Length: 563
Image (cartoon, rainbow, N blue to C red):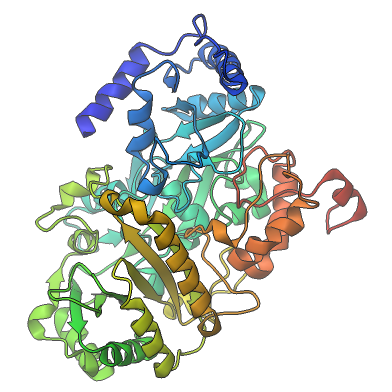
């Protein structure tokens, strides 16, 4: 499939869509005619600007392959079952800074909705579709912007937004080579995730208890603003540089590249993935110990907790719990700490492995057994599923009786599972307004609630989504409140959503409507983000259903903290 996509991209360059022969308008569809007209205008603009690598859904058999390649949640794959969301009808593949800049300028001139796609892992598909919008959508797929330049001496790297985390980790390890001090970067574990959205939402990973979020380690960025200006950190100013590091993707402009701070790691680290089963009560009691131990471990130790009825590590049937641990140090220290702090896990010597940091990346990547460091370069997600997810933060230990109720309910739906990530460490020592991402010192751990199914089971989609909605309601009393917080990188449209662009779809106030979910993602940072958005993108060129909206002109005139 990789060679197929490469061939498709090559063909697009050789045979770009021509503005002289736009697809004929359909007599049965005014929207099709409108799309054709928009595409004709866009084609003329792009070609005159030297951009040739683009295609349209109505005149290219390549289009569905390009569209679906980076759709990582099959719930939004094309064609989509009813009701049909507005999905991208035009795909542009910029290959350098000028072509990205021209693509944005031309899309805006053609009054097209812009979607930016880095790795395609948006939980609600908002990097390539608009569920509640009807106008034409242009998808700027950044996959060709994947260059990485590592400076080992400075311990930094420039990372283009279309590269994947797997490519980044591979490049860091290759550049550091056999140096006495290996380098790493604090970000997520999935190698096909793109940094464009990941860093823009914060970016939590296995090194975050030691080194903070990916966004905490951004030194500079190159951003194309909504008006087409190219801005670096100095040119964009303090407030915009703050906003792009955790304020959500697809909102502030298009980040062409990030300059990131790399971290030093030991030559050898320790890792384990162990599964434990038992009665529902026994599983609950093990989770209870974990929630008290994991957030208080040394910064160098990360231990996450997965709970479900069909976990891949389980060798039997029924509910079980998997613990995934990474320790930045030798095996003997890891074993000693776990024996002293989490003896209930009964971690065996043979269950803890020592390896290099880059080998640990492969170990926790979710790639199939036997995968190598070279497999991190593959940007194709080979095992795709349908899923719906939600998120929560836990600020006080959940009582073991409630944990038992949780496990009882979870055991009734084998397609559902939880991922619980410990906070504490470096995460607890940062202010909630250091970045837009506010979930810091008060939080013990984060929860992802997921339900996942295959194509063969998609007939039960509505039932699965209803189940996780009821589960989320059940969990309400046990998690953060006022507001019930959520992580913007785990987008959840059930929290509320807007229509689109400058059209509020009947709502009386963009800013107050968006507060429904904005304060859950950003807490007290929401209003500051609104002020930045109003200055940078008053026309709301870069938007999605849960992006930060700007103040209207009348709101600016009456105050709201604006000058």
